[in-house]
Image 1 (cartoon, rainbow, N blue to C red):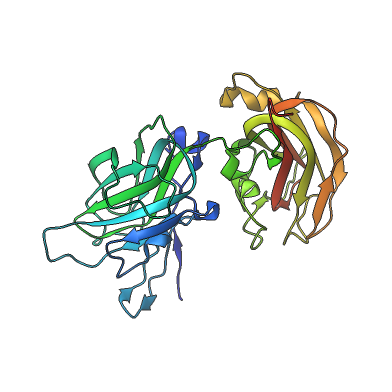
Image 2: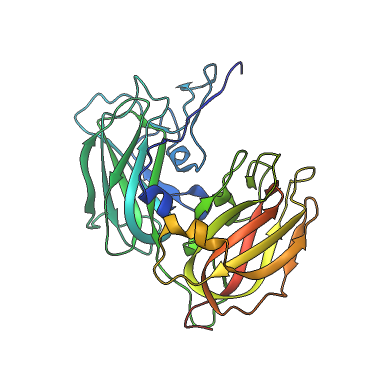
Length: 338
C-alpha cells in the first residue's frame, strides 16, 4: 500500500461526545445482528472505535475496500438498513454519523430507530421508536445530532436512504447501572459508565483507551504522551460511572517498554455536582488515593494499599514525568453498596 489516509477527529465536536461514552463501541461487545445488504463493506466496520482509514490501492473481490458499512447500488424502491445490538444498554444523549472517505458512494440520508429487548435480534413485531428522523448527510464529513432517550435502549436500527455507505456510527450515552449490592466491579470501565473528562496531553494515544475491556492489543491501544522537555508531569481525569469506594487498583503497562512512566499516583474526590470545566483546577488539590508507585516495563501492577477516602466520583491519574500506560482498573463497590 503506497498511502494510508486517516480521518481527522472534528475540532468542533459537541459537548455530549466528550461527556458520554460510545455505547456502539465494538470493544464493549456491540455488534451488527442483521443487515439488508453489506456487499461492498461489512456493516460491523462502522462500530470500530478508531478513526476511519482509506487505502487508495486496496480492493477485494467485490470492489473498492472501504472502512465502514457500504451496500450495493439499489435498483428498486426500497432502502438499506442494519440492526446493532449495543454492548451495554443505556440512555442516549447524541449521535455521530461519519462519512469519512465516502464521496460518490455515501448515503444521502439516514434515520435512527431504537428499542429495548433481551434477545440478540428483536422480534419482527418489535415496536421501534424514532430517535432521529430522516436527516441529510454529506460526503466525507462528520455529522452530529443531539437526541435523547429517557429509558435505556439495547438495539439501534440504522436506515440509510436509499443505499450507500457510512464510515462510523457512534451512539453517545450513559450505560444503565447494573451493579448489585454485593457486586465488585471496575468503577471506571467503559461498560460501567467510566469516562475521561480531561487530560493535558495525548500525543500518541487517548486516555479513553485506559477504560477499554481486555488487555491492550498494541502500544497504540493505551494512553501515551509526548516526551516531556519541561518540568512537571502528565495527567488525566476520569469520572467513575457511579460513585463508589475503591478496594484495589490495577495498572498495566502492556507493550510499553522503553516509554513507560517512571512512577504513577492517583488522586481522588467526591464531587456532588461536577462541572467538567472546573475539575482540572480542582483536581490538583484532591487527596491522594494511591501514593506514587514505581512502574516497570510491559507489566501488570496491583496495588491494595490505598488511603481510605470513602466514596469517590472522580480520579486524577498522574504519570511521572511522561510516557504510556495501557489500562487502569479501579475495583470497588458503588455508593450505597459498601
